[in-house]
Length: 139
Image 1 (tube, rainbow, N blue to C red):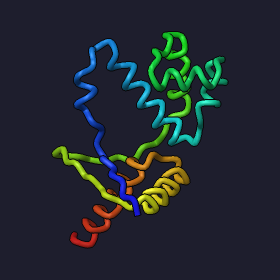
Image 2: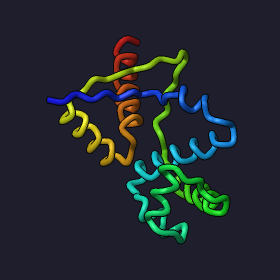
Image 3: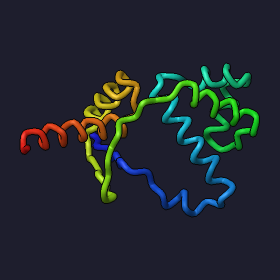
C-alpha cells in the first residue's frame, strides 16, 4: 500500500525565493485553488465567470499571469462568496506531518470535500475539536 505525506503548513521556501512582483500572483493562485475546492467549484465555473475558456484558467493556475481585469473579477467573486475557515490559534508555529496510506488519505479528502473544506483545513478543524474536548475534560 502506497503511503503519502501531507504537510499541514505551506512551504515558504519556494515562495521566499520568488521575486516580489511574482509573489502576489502565486499567493492569489494558491488562494483561488483553495477557495474553489472549499466552495465545491471548479475551473469551468471560474472560466464562465471570467468570460474565458477553461483552458485559460488552467494556464493561469499553472504558469501564466492572471490579467489585472480578470484578477479583479476573481477577487470580487471570492469576496462575494467567502469561505468560513476553521479558526486555529497557534501560539508557536508547529509543523504536523502525517504519513497516511493512500486509501486513508483519499477517504479524508472525500470527507473534507463533503464539508466544503480543503484537506488541510479539515484536519486542522478536527485537531481543534480534539484539543477542545481534551481541554473541557481537564477543566
